[in-house]
Length: 95
Image (cartoon, rainbow, N blue to C red; front, side, top):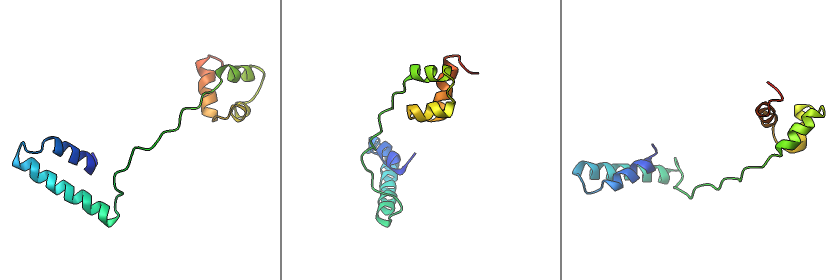
């Protein structure tokens, strides 16, 4: 768990016990020290993830049946060779 996660957990329990309050204060000091000394960056917004690329499974199968190599199919589709192999295995065209 990161220091931020620990602080959040301790904040949820703040005021329930003296020990929890002391632990919260200590964790905040450590976290602030790391941020101030540049050891860690300040918390930021979650990174935006790229949408998954759709792959034309029918085209993969058709190209393979037409005699194309896995590398050629991957280049044509714009994906990696592992994706082509996975789809061909799932369709039962290779072992």
